[in-house]
Length: 297
Image (cartoon, rainbow, N blue to C red; front, side, top):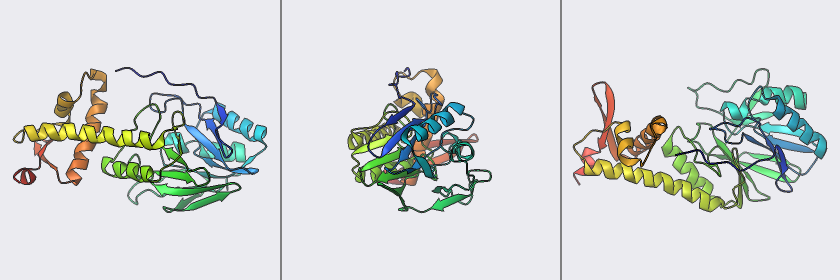
């Protein structure tokens, strides 16, 4: 299993009458070509979605160039979630591009028990599901879509039926997640919007959004079925996530076993919430089997 060659994404590109993409200049196996940040609107002041990572001077320079070339400025910043490659550049953007550390920055609040993102001197405005952002020529609607992260939002551009998907979906890869149960519900919510196009936080523009979202859903359901089939065929056996990986993944190279094991664990915790499997402790290790009470019916 090799890494597919990714299509080229320019540093700055106008994608529609209302959307300009500025690449975060932080390529990696997880960020693909880099973090896509977006300027949205048609007027002199635009909304910036995400700010990339900190310590990336090329991104700051490209953002400054974009504002200069299009003769625009930044009205406010929206962060799709707390991960560093989406909010890490906020202080530098406010300090070096907007030149105002009192700039309006907003995001969805994390759960009370989780640490909130540290934006230094910048005060963060926390919004609710359905919150509307307005700028000249554009209305962005907040869609709370957790799973990849506990505070993750997508943004729906009403005028173009375009969905800014954050990290929930990519064109050239599948996404990672911290809670599969909520992630699957978020994918269904995104599909129900019937977007005309998806602007992801990583990778190319997705021009077949409903088909791509259904692929994501089907891929996860297929893996779930493989896990359930294995447990049903062995109702009296206890499995570790790694043992499940070795049974359901085809031709997996050893270097990917850890990531696959994490994926399987998230599937199992979702199935536990669905009351379809159960976990027990064996030799201080969590092991899994089919739900014994369910299997009797």
